[in-house]
Amino acid sequence: MSRVLAVALIPALVLAALWNWAGERASSRPVVTVPTVEQGAAWPDSDAASIALSWRRVADAVVADETADELRDGLDRLTAGVDDRTCLVVDTGSSVVVASDAALNLGPVQSVVVAAAGLILLGPDHRPMTAVFGSPPVDGIVDGDLILLGGGDALLGTREVSGPPRRHPLPITPLEALVDALRLTGVERVTGDVVGVSDRYEDVARPEAWQVPLAEASRVGALLVDRGRIRGGPGNVALDPAQGAARSLLEVLRDGSIAVDGSARTDSASALEGREMLAEVAGETLADVVGGWLTGPDARVTADGWAEFADALLMEIGYAVAGSGTRLGGAAAVSALLEEISRSEGVAASGWEPTADLRDGPGLDAGSTSSCGTLAWALATIESLGEESGRPIGLDVTEGDRRRAVVAELPGETRTRIVVVGDPGTVADLVDSAQGLDGLITGASTVTAEQLAPLMTGGG
Image (cartoon, rainbow, N blue to C red; front, side, top):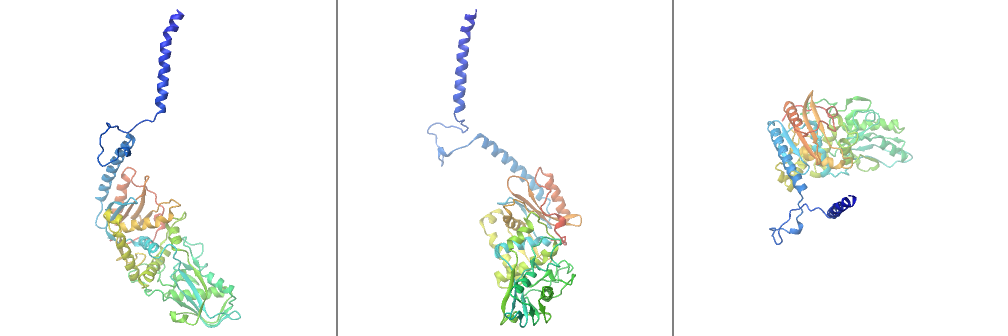
């Protein structure tokens, strides 16, 4: 019986061995997932050897198409809620997939547009310089006046007023550095006055359209210390920034044991004749200032500080590019830049045109307008500074308890941003609609509403 059983098992064992051998051979061969064609069949305008179509890639493509269709439907519904006082842009990083654009007053967010234009027109390494001129010191004495020449550094300040603690992490350029440099050269006394010169910019009158207190946005010039605040009384603002700057330097000199026989006053650039530079201090690079503002690990924004910075930057653009240190000159240079950008292949194909009609730097003039597309471009330009940190830029501006402007990242593998500016009620409805779409928009933003002030007022 056992012999019969053994004989019967032999064929089964042989078949099992053959089955395992065939399986191993099959598993050792590459799995072909491309469709095959008959020998000699032609692929029009293509090389058959270059065809590599996998069923997985086909499936992924189908899913991607379906997802894109859903996204387009959702964005179409989103766009339907945009009125003529609101603008909406959804930017994928390479193109604008939805643009319901309008020229609106962006309020303080306009500073982002001016900063981006400055990075391109002035260069990321642009550094404003402030210098002190006088006669060469003899036995520690500067005979005559000491001239403080402004170079457009709106972040120049004293440690007493602009140093910590303060409400914003602006990179202050210390005025005391000039005094330290003078002391190193042996200066102990100045026989004349401290004279402030602010001729670099012509347009220094405070715009009448700025319906905000001086404490929030003071008069701007090429020579500005502590944002125009008077060192002896930081709650007060000097009516003449150059006069206030000269007074601040006079007080810092005396604090640094350098005697000054005269007083503080202002003059024109003609006061520099016959004098040589005794000391200078450079501000932070534009890239560091703007990058730290929106892409740094401690990024936060307050209205006080950025109003003067943006206004001075616009006039510096005018001075460097248009040969006119005025807001009008800077605005013309920014408009020409945006016109050039609008003619570029990528922007022209996207169906939207970046535009801006700037009356000032910080957007405090209600007649100053930009489009959402321009804001999206500006954010992308600035964000390129923060690629190493990988931090997205977000802005959330509120008016009271209502949202006035939202810039937020959409989740996903590619960088997609939604930009909404306009009437608070409409913005709130659009944000709610966007959040209602499956995973379309995140609620988080890098810069919170409390960090970006003053709140925008008015409309488009």
